[in-house]
Length: 243
Image (cartoon, rainbow, N blue to C red):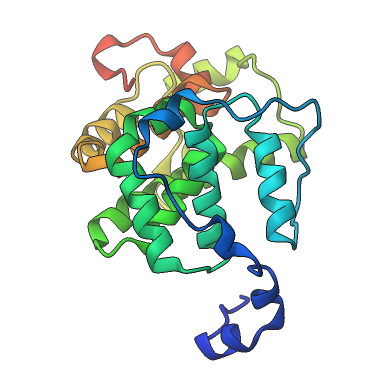
């Protein structure tokens, strides 16, 4: 496994210093956040680039294209995540990031897509001084990346059908099929596994802005085309619903 660079190696890395040149021009957050919720990023007919961009100026200009027509507040959030990822003035920029979530967490949950919600969770997991907050952020990240991996697995290996195979569904009802290491396949239609998991998640969902973020990501995964949504469509036992 590739190892993370030590602090000394990171300090001596020319590329790490280069990627944050000029970042000081962007390292600020307005005192009054309310106007940023109503002012929109200038519209653009250009497509945002994907992949790494070395220049901080170009990266943030590209970010404005990505958030074209969206509230300035979501751009400000993305900008802080970028500055933190580039390790520029991390303590102060994380404090700004945390203030943004403390004051406008509901707005961010309603207006950020899953990509940026997961980036926010990663930021909580990496930098919050409270290990409880970091643990919830990490839980969100692991959950989202697990969905990403298995949906990619379906794409790569060709298992993309949205229609269940009746014979397989009936087989699961008649025979509790083993998966591996004592785990069994999910009993489609009635299983209480996800309901019980949801009950266990509730205390975490109540844990401040990161809990709101966790609940939002969880709920979105039940609505978007994931295994959770596919099994939700087949579920028929009311007392074991998990959404």
